[in-house]
Image 1 (cartoon, rainbow, N blue to C red):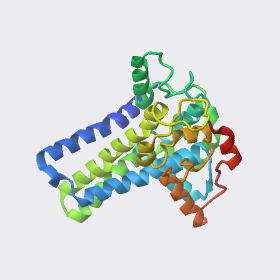
Image 2: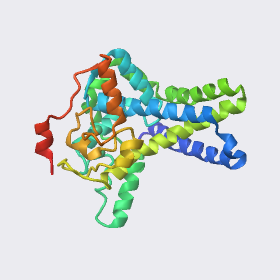
Image 3: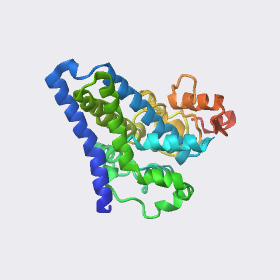
Length: 294
Ligand SMILES: [Zn+2]
Ligand SMILES: [Zn+2]
């Protein structure tokens, strides 16, 4: 991996963990007073906003083209997804398209399953699938698979502005909490809880889709890999935990395919469609669902 990319990944991974440690130190020293309603609102608000930027934007729209929307919403989703601090847009999508092409085979950038046959190998594989892959070299021809994204100047600009956007996503909750509390401490604690701590939580929830959701859960559909539906990450990852459904029907905008599989990203897409903002939504037909049922 080129040194500049290594530094990027190091900062993206270690920075939020340092934020988590700072939040723990604050809790230890100041007790519950270190976090109030303004911090909780900032954290939940930014988690949801940036989370939908990743799930609806980076994943379902840019990687899988599972629906169409206007230019403003595309840019909005790309900006919110970038503030999640999970890597710049173009690399995120290139890696994920490769994951679907080679899922759980050699060439999959983050499979837990191609590292050997023992339990220790699976554990090693899960570490690789969760975070280790971030420090590996990209596939040399990955640019080929994202020509559609690279031909969009607005997306390329947002991709280049990745670090300023992550930084903005940390300053924003700081400013929000400071505006309510009128204190410098509020600015600091807003940046910690709503910024770096929120990035840390969302990163590990998202990366658990690669690690946990390729190991533990139910597999109702033939997907040709080890992807699994995991209800916990269905909730935490805003609908992305229905991962066996997703690998069986990658271009579906809806991942919680049953009424009892809560998929908050799908509800937002449906809401946007109701308002006329989203169109040409792709979902599997009843015949396609039946054909892939195990
Ligand atoms: Zn997967
Ligand atoms: Zn996908």
